[in-house]
Image (cartoon, rainbow, N blue to C red; front, side, top):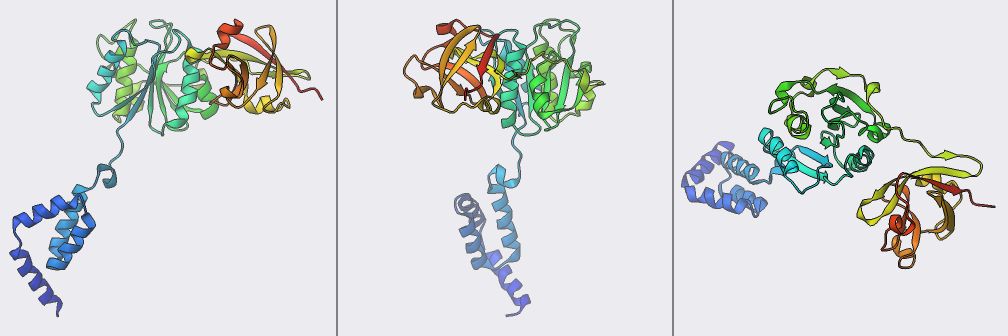
Length: 341
């Protein structure tokens, strides 16, 4: 059979097909696309019809299979709490600018005014989000003052919309900051554009939404020197011939576990292994605590020293509150001696 006769026969078959055949093919396409394609090829041998079927197959594909990107993401964190409408108002501002945006609540229960807690939570969460994610953070005890509202871009391609008050300290130390701009463009703000007490609504939320929408972040305002960013005064653990002096920097949520700034790697250099008892001094109180993997490795209501999910040394009581039982709350000094040989 010649090519010309194939085309002719294919055309005859095509003219013999009814509209219902195409609708039936499309309906089946979402269930068994490969079978439908083969059936159509066998039935008509028409290149034109095969092209139509493949077009229908493309339409019927899930959005992800067609190369559609996930919606842009804003990760939102505040110390507002959830007893009033503040968080919902801020989200409303974001949705009004970018209706398709996906908003993830990191937490709105940051200890009020605690910039250190905000910095810790950013440090813990950012590694799990991709480049391009926008973090909007409103922990702003000096709102309305001369402190700057900024957008920073990390060297990993993430954006941070927040007050310049030290919230970026830990992220900058680990990931690096590529560039910073002060928010001054009134067109990216809402309301009177001169809010003195609700910058979360009037400045940070709309700017975050503009970034998520893909607007050019350079339009937000003038560039600042990265070195000018405000940094928290965090004392690193200090080592000497006796051991290490570190700091209890926070409590882990409602459980009363104490979080320290001592990395697991540095702690292990002291010579301890899991199962050993560790003599420590916490908040000036000497005690001996067992170093274990998890809470159930000690008896009920017994203390333990462990490595938490962020790779830091932590102190806890199995099904209890270390802070309450031992009367220690951050900030407090922690001393751990080297293992005696």
